[in-house]
Image (cartoon, rainbow, N blue to C red):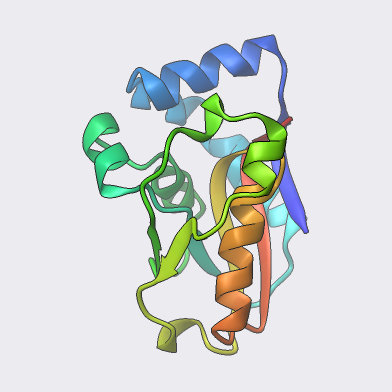
Length: 155
């Protein structure tokens, strides 16, 4: 299950580009209240564990921040980072078919903290669902009780 705060349109495309690719992190303050209220409306899980989608070391160095971590910290609650992102070419440069058939996007860093937990993956945008699918599969295989996702934008 994925829940999103906003729908993708030309306005949100520009906002996301400024936030994510141009480092305008001050924009996060604009959607903080919407993120918090949408999350509360969408999830009634008693003690969810937030898992922000990680960036590869290369992408983190390039951007200087992880936008998914920023979103997760707006929500509050326990945040874990059990996944490592394998560096690949940018998702935004790939066609839908290429995104859906990628393999080995993530590796598991640690499994103990997620066993029998309700996990909510946090990401900036849900396009094809490939990123969330790959992350959820690894977490479920490692023993997570359930895995859902929450994104800022859904296209």
